[in-house]
Amino acid sequence: MKKVIILILVLGLLTGVGRVLLTLPAVQDALLVRGTAAVAEGVGAAFSESTSLRVYVCGSASPLGMGQAQACIAVVTPEHFYLIDSGAGSTDNINRLGLPTERLQGLLLTHFHSDHIAEIYEVNLGSWIGGRPAPLTVYGPRGVDEVTNAVNAGYRLDRVYRTGHHGADLLPPALGVLEHKMISPGVILEDGDLKITAYVSEHPPIHPAVGYRFDYRGRSVVVSGDSNVSGDTLKIVDGADLLLHDALSLPTVTALSEAMGAAGRSRTSKIVADVIDYHASTDSLIELGEKSDVDMVAFYHLVPVPLNSVLEDIFMRGVPDNFVLTEDLMRFELPIGSDKIVVNRP
Ligand SMILES: [Zn+2]
Ligand SMILES: [Zn+2]
Image 1 (cartoon, protein in one colour):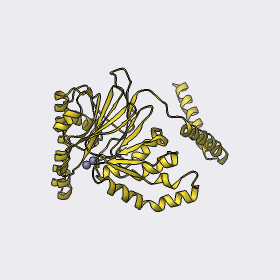
Image 2 (cartoon, helix red, strand yellow; image 1 turned 90 degrees about the vertical axis):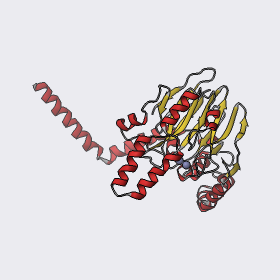
Image 3 (cartoon, protein in one colour; image 1 turned 135 degrees about the vertical axis):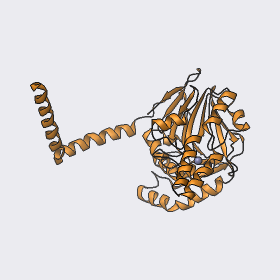
Image 4 (cartoon, protein in one colour; image 1 turned 90 degrees about the horizontal axis):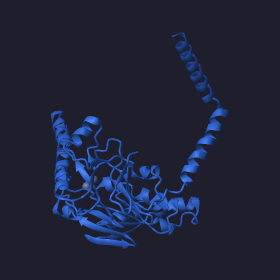
């Protein structure tokens, strides 16, 4: 007993001495040098390449985000890098994941709700600074020209400032201006072994809204954007390995709307109730899993993001084993020549 008391006293003393040392400028400066060196090595480290088709969750949330970034998914192969949507907070996650922004080839927008487009310019800026060798193209349905032109116009001065400050050699002005391409449902891009197909999503009254399917060397992933489950969803997921789908927990959203109403917050109550009809409920996705042969269904664009394990259990009520709930910074690896899907949590 005596030994334990002595041990506790010694540890307390060492902790106290450590705290005092950390207040000394010389110790702080030495830690600063070591810390910044570690950061610089991390930034300079090459993105770990893999032959797999890889999918990264840069934003798992809806506007009911609760601390997670809004909609953004990255699809990466050894030769390709595309982002699907760029909601608020997604650029930070792109950086934390260490994604190779210098080789970003396109930003595919599903539709133009703010939780999908808030960081278009941040994605553009990050990849411009990262050394992207060509202008970034924004793909999207009708309206993509209006959105892209507005972003270019709104941030014109930012681009002027940055090129003026860092020089045109480092930040060529032409590479800071977004380009756009309006797409229609069907195959929108074939680049080597990668094929990207757009399909119509059901998100009334927003029209057109689309989702995207990526096929790469026998592996495939579908990213829904915002949508109910429709006949088009069933068709596009046919034979797909992985479906990332917008998901709404009906018990949670209903309870939230009713609670807002009971608390006299009728405006919020109505807005929360309104979202029910244009996002896929978890039950409708379970039904999709039964009717289709998709291997794995991952819920993202969570309405709302579950804040604790009880809400997670409610969100995942009744789902089969091949369903997962995503969170920011989650990664999926689909090795070529295999039917495996490796799920990595942060
Ligand atoms: Zn939407
Ligand atoms: Zn949304």
